[in-house]
Amino acid sequence: MACPSCRSSLGLLLPRGPAATSTLRQGLFAESTTARAALSFSQSSNTTASSTRRSTSLLSQQFRRIHTTRQCRAEGGEGSGGLAGGFRKLLASVAGNQSSSYIAYGATQRIYKDCAKQADYTITPEDRKAGRVKETADGEEIGVGNGSIWHENFTEFGLLPTFSTWAHVTMLHLWLVVVRLRCLDKDAHATWQAQLVDHFFHQAEEKMDRTHDMSSRVMRQRYLQDLFVQWRGVVLAYDEGLVKGDAVLAAAVWRNLFKASEDVDVRALAAIVSWMRSSLKYLDSMEDAGLALHPTLFKNKPDAELQVVDKLVPALEGQTSKGAAAAADVEGLSAAGQAEAKASPVTSPKAEPKGAASQKPKAVPKFKTAA
Image 1 (cartoon, one colour):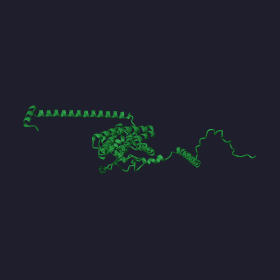
Image 2 (tube, one colour):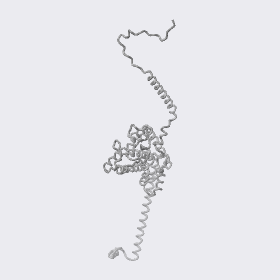
Image 3 (tube, helix red, strand yellow):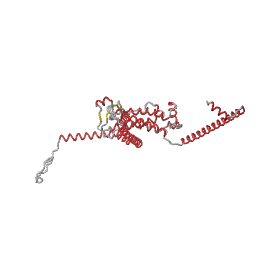
Image 4 (cartoon, one colour):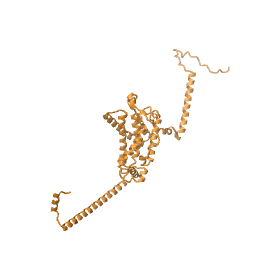
């Protein structure tokens, strides 16, 4: 509201009288009408431009070649926001108007917890104060397992409940999930993989600090850098084994999970490789929405594949039986030879004196003939 002096100054500038007032009102109405028309024209122009850009992006997406699953191909990969088709719609309906990154954060956190609990362990402060925490030959602290099949006391896998075991078992499960996420859109795969890796390294640093009492942040960052290099190597090694065959995949598991130990059980190694193949098949058969809403992504456990490993294929059953029979025959012959050797020991011949060759008696025939 203007002061009296301002109102008086404004009155001097404006024309007076009824005619002048009506003229001013008509001018203001014309200007407001022109402004509204210009605004509506700009909005229509923006709408047309946005629809043109949307149609152009949809046409470009139709010719984009990406690796998709059967469900993604059925949905057509429509939409935006980094998630494909029905997957994006379902997550949007669950999360409302939240952004795709926030949706990925919550979903990947639940997936990561399923991966991290497989070989989890604890070291209580009471055991640390009492000095009951044991260490390996390399100086790595041994905790108390959670009853997982990966630990030594529960299965023949022979893995101690240590930080290294937990990290490599978790990275193995994360790799299985990452392989499945590659079937999504490129942006979705990058977002979800980054969120999974962030969850892993956040908990790794938390375990270093709280479980292993590593208070130095500089030391933790150094170990995290080494762990990141191991993660990159694990992904590369398992990808190579996935492409080249079970022998290469088993070698990668042996180097990383079992630390290239010579005492590893070959049956356990073969069971882990078989479990990895079956888990990848199960994840591939799952719909995209199941990655975010399914209670667990790992239906079976590695020890269930021991029955598959111990079972002989039909092509080897006959050869194995013949080989076992031949081995039994060889063992029988060797046992009989050893018994005969014990019954009639062989004595070493004595050295003959010089000239004994000329004093040898004539040979006596075994059977005498009739006279």
